[in-house]
Length: 348
Ligand SMILES: NC(=O)C1=CN([C@@H]2O[C@H](COP(=O)(O)OP(=O)(O)OC[C@H]3O[C@@H](n4cnc5c(N)ncnc54)[C@H](OP(=O)(O)O)[C@@H]3O)[C@@H](O)[C@H]2O)C=CC1
Ligand SMILES: N[C@@H](CC(=O)OP(=O)(O)O)C(=O)O
Image 1 (cartoon, rainbow, N blue to C red):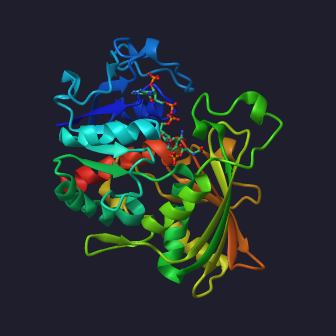
Image 2 (image 1 turned 45 degrees about the horizontal axis):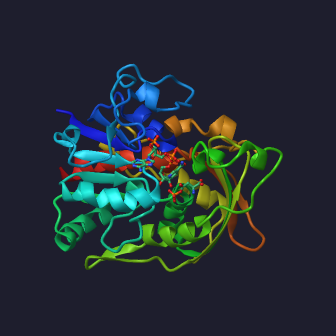
C-alpha cells in the first residue's frame, strides 16, 4: 500500500521538483498540494507558473491546491508532508504539521541546526534519524521534523564522507559557483546575473560551515557531537540555471594521494542494497580533463549523483577536485524524498 503524501510550497521552484519526483512514485501517493492563500482553490496548472522542461504530470495538473493548514480536511489521510516552504514560513508551519502527527521532511533551513532535529543525508549519517525519539519526547508531538541540508552543503559533504572515513579530515576549503535556480524563480534578476558573477549569497557560507560539521558529526548519548575539522567556504552566484559546481581543497589527517581519494569516492555506495527508488550512486567520477560541467553532467543519476572530476594533487593541501550537483534535485527535493524513502524502509 502506498503512503499518502503532501507537498507544502508545491507551486515554487523546489515544490515543482517535488511534484516531478512524487507524481508516479512507487512508495508514495501524492494526494495534497498546498501553497499560499493566493493559490488555494485553484487547479495546480493555474496556480503554478511551471518552468520545468517537462510538462506538469497529467495526474497532477488538475488537482486543486489547498491552503497550508494542517487541520484542512485534505491532510486527514496524509502521513508525510514534504516542505518546500520559504524558511520563515517553515518556522511557523512545520511544527503545526508535526503536532498533527505528520512526518515533515523539510527542505527549509528553519530547524536544521536545532539539537533534537535530524539533519540527514542517508548515505552519510542515517543514524541521526534516531534523534526523533528525543524530539517527540521534548516537543510532545507524535509527528516529527526531519531536515535535509542546504544544497551546497550536500554536494560537499557527500564527497567528504568517504575521505573522512578513510583518511580523516584536517582542513577543507570550498569555493562554490551556484546556479540561479537556488534562489528561486524570482530570486536573481537577469540584469544582475547575465554577463556577471555575484560573489555573495546571504548566509550560505555560514550554513555550509556549520551544517557540514553536524552532518559529519557523531550521534552519542542523544546528541550530535560535531566533527572537528576546519572548513572555510566562499560562495558565488553564476549564470547557470541548474547545477552547483564546487572547487574543493582537502587536507587529510593521515595524508592521501589523488588516486586513493578517487578510489574511496568511487567505492562509496552505502545504500545500494536497499532499492530506494530515488537512490543513485552517490558519487560518479568523470575522467575527462574538462568535466564536470553543469549543462552536460547535472542529470547523471537522474540528478541524484554528485559528479566529481579533476581529482589532483594540491601544492598546499593534499588534493583538490571539482564536484557538481543538481541543486534542485540532489540539493533539494530529491534529498527530502530520499530521506523519506530511507525512513519508511528502516523505521515504519
Ligand atoms: N531552490 C533551491 O535550490 C533550494 C531551495 N531550498 C529551500 O526550499 C524552500 C523553497 O524554495 P523555493 O522553491 O526556491 O521558493 P519559491 O519562492 O520558488 O516557492 C515558495 C513556495 O512557498 C509558497 N508560499 C509563499 N508564501 C506562502 C504562505 N504565506 N503560506 C503558504 N505558502 C506560501 C509559495 O506559494 P504561492 O505560489 O501560492 O505563492 C510557493 O509554493 C526554501 O526554504 C529554500 O531556502 C533549499 C535548497 C535548495
Ligand atoms: N541558498 C541556496 C538555496 C537555498 O535555499 O538554501 P537553503 O535551503 O539553505 O535555504 C542557493 O541559493 O543556491
